Figure 1 (cartoon, helix red, strand yellow):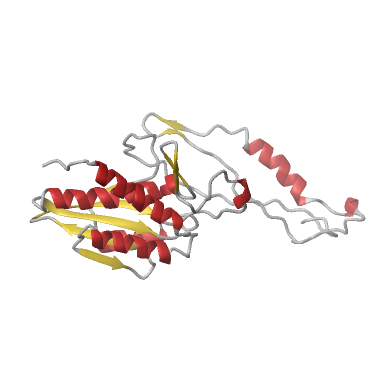
Figure 2 (cartoon, helix red, strand yellow):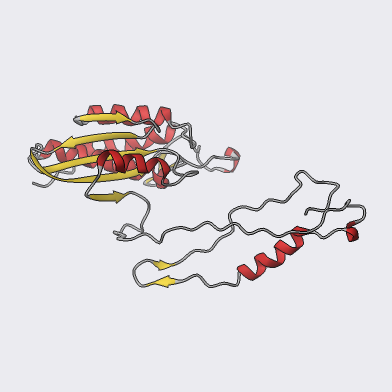
Length: 248
């Protein structure tokens, strides 16, 4: 049986997305948005709602017959908003304009989380639960700063047979993940007073030269996964602050 799409259901998905956006949920402070999701699970008639020790929120719908478990997964934390004055719409307003919802986390990924919560609930209502297996929707915490750590607890608890992750994918199904590696590179110099830099060796200049060479490297490509990404994400010098010292 196929779920029925109505204007009322469309509006409910929009309103849920707006509600999630309006709850500021920086990494480690997702409690309010988790409460909003729990309320949505209850309204849609989910069979079980759980918040684990990390703060992940999970809603479970059980089919009438035994079968596979599918996990619909999305993180509910966002990166911060350093300067709200640079936004044309309030980052926590969830405003609907020009057929778009504006706000921090709309595409990364509260829009997808709203859609998955709603889709599973609508499916359960329309069948009604005349399907094999279980559907679990998870709202993951700490993804932006500790990707994969909190999500492991969900996999251990649910042990899903299939997982659909709601990250943006150009509206098509991505069937793989490029993986990730973090590499720490250090350069070493010799400290000296900044008034006499010739007595020292500036480690930052060495690093700058190295970064230029790294920037020339070509990332690998894959026929299914596409182009790889190679990007500098953080840089630090020591001592810091070191206004009077050549960094070593």
